[in-house]
Amino acid sequence: GIMFNALGLAHAAASSRVRSELRRAAAAFLEGVAALERDWLSQGHEYITGTTPTIADVIAICDLETVEFLAPDLEHLPHVTRWRNRMRRRPSFSTVSQELWVLTKDLLVDPSA
Image (cartoon, rainbow, N blue to C red; front, side, top):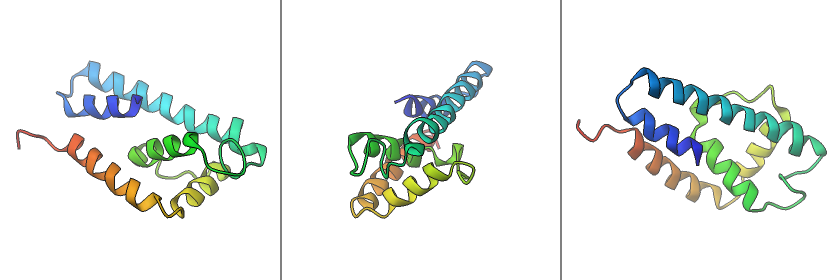
């Protein structure tokens, strides 16, 4: 997704073009989180599309957890915060989050070091 592209760019030389692209990607991501709050979760649903989690929830939580450094404090988005906590309590979450951490760490580590 867009965030993995942004992380890949962060791994490249820090030119002004790269920094500009990262700012654009971060802004788009944060707007997406705000839309999740405003357009989906504020409708009273426990999950994005209703009362049970779907692939939409899995994809969204993976993106959100992978780039948590962009939005570590979501308290101003109470529906997203409750949904995120609900998703984190799911049994499959720890397995998925561990895999995402490995992927993210690999992208952020400088291979020339």
